Amino acid sequence: MRLRPPPGALPVAIIAAGALLSSTAAAAPPEGKVEGALPRAAPAPPAGARTAGAVDQGTGGDPAAPEADDAIEAQEDGAATAQPPPVRPRVQLATRPPPLHVEYAQYGVALAAEISLDAGAACPRSGPLYSCILGSGGGLAIRSGYRSPGPWYFGGAYQFTKMDSSNLYRLGIFQQLRAEMRYMPDIGYRAAPYFSAGIGGVVYGNEWGVETGGALIFGGVGVELEVSRRAVLGVSCVYRPVLLAGWQDTANYERATAIAQFVGFELLLEVRTELGRR
Image (tube, rainbow, N blue to C red; front, top):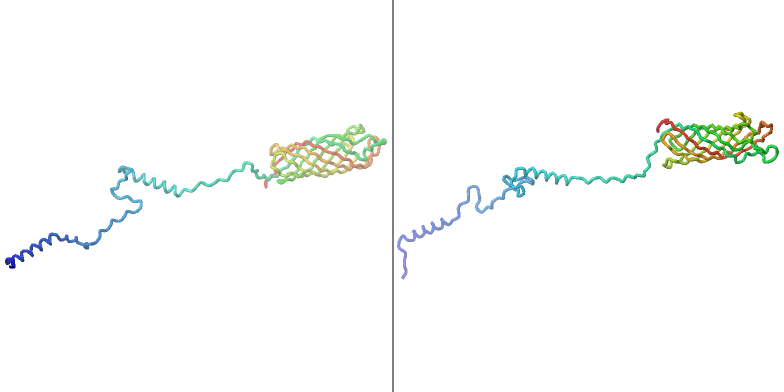
């Protein structure tokens, strides 16, 4: 036996089911949005910018925190851009200073000694002329010259020496007038060696008189000590052969032409006057 619903019950059931479905339906999406679309993420703030209302954990909300952050960033930027200090070369304490390249007028005096090695034919070793009229002696030299910026010196000198004449002369004076040159290599010290050479003329006689004369050449070595830029001390030793013409001495003896040989020593003091610079 089949049961049938009473009349009018079916429409009521349909209405109730529709109301139940409508109460469980999802709410319609708001205006301007599509149902099922994902929400957009907020844009990220630029690097170094601070968001409004954000508080740093280390500052505790202090208003001066932005200035501290700026200072830290400035220090980091400065450390990143700082260059390492330049490497300075080592200073060589023993480096010699450059030469001054100064020209000087150089002049002075010297104590001189003439040591006779051989008087030659002027003093024969036998006969009535055995007494030597030309022996050793000492005296004074006066000189002046030009000192170049380089190693060269050019000048002249006048020297007189009282010689041992074995009492044949009361006062035998041996006079020299010389042209001189020196070569002084630069070794970087106040005391410097030099080589000297020159040529000149001589006269000899009693009490500044002239009874004979001749020529000489010489060559030697010396050492010059620079006491200051304006004064020098030095010693020198030279070998000096002298050609003397024959003459008649005060005892009326005829002296033959002779080549006498001497070794000369000098202790000199010279002063410089600056002429100019190059």
